[in-house]
Length: 432
Image: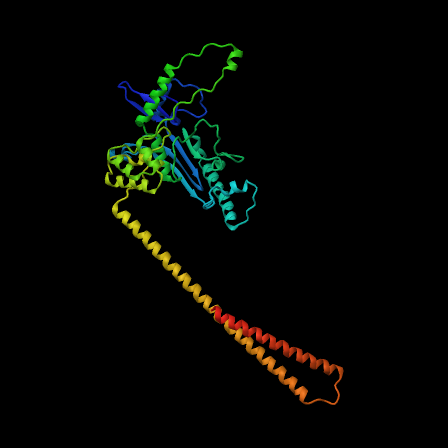
């Protein structure tokens, strides 16, 4: 048996090795070396002692928590062929827009850098963060009785996402509670379905991968062949301290390597050759969790559609089968969406052209009206000026002379204005 990784491996009398997840049996606060006999006894009595487990997931504005009763369900409440492993006592899921689009990260993380962002999106994200924190705290506060009777509490949350879980004046949970355990494998978007999948995975007893067994054997050989340390004096020991060599990194199984590399064809050939997609690597990840892109994930889903009963796809993390009919429907839907987008873009350009033409026509009409008004004003001023020159009084006062000069100036200004408006009208016609 080994306790060096997130998995605990046991070997029975027949020499067969099986594994369970380490946090199921060992608390994170328990740093002592636990005897193998004690660990085996914990595993044997787990099904009898476990009554209530809690799963809490929080990531990127998504939150899901559920309380499960692990006591055996009475036979009258289920059929023998489909006996449930657990019963849901309570569950809640929330989603709020708190992550900055494309840039990533919470708004509070951006605010912590000292930059004051006053955009509408930033205000909405700040409000949603406060609302989500309140919803989480209220939910956990209403579950105080259920949390008090829980045997295990499994939490998957980063430091910022864990603030409403452990923070505040009266937190619902405390970080150093020995019942709280970290989830030792990757999880997807927090939902109630994902919480059930996490619990199902934690309860599973599985066969470790061949690579994990080989790495275990290599570590055992290294421990046996390691020479004993010679006894040194204190001053010699200080001078000869050297860092211990790190154990070799466990290689990834072939299916994990193909999924990471984005090689969908190799993933397909390995699955068809019988490679187990439920097999986890040394970090507890199944091949679907490390898939590089959509093409690789679709390869797993197509295999699920062709071989629905070959593997436990819930344990493998494959969400749903991808049949030819479903794929054709998705392609048709994408084509329809693109056609609608193109039609919408054409309509937008058509409306913009009509608006531009209407604006040009209005500007032309306004310029022509302005020219006509200026021409009328100039003609009227010219007529008054000629009439004043034709009939000259014998004598003009100073005031009358100044009025005449002003009329001439106004006439000249009106003619200049009319010339400018005509030029502008001509330019407008050339531009349109």
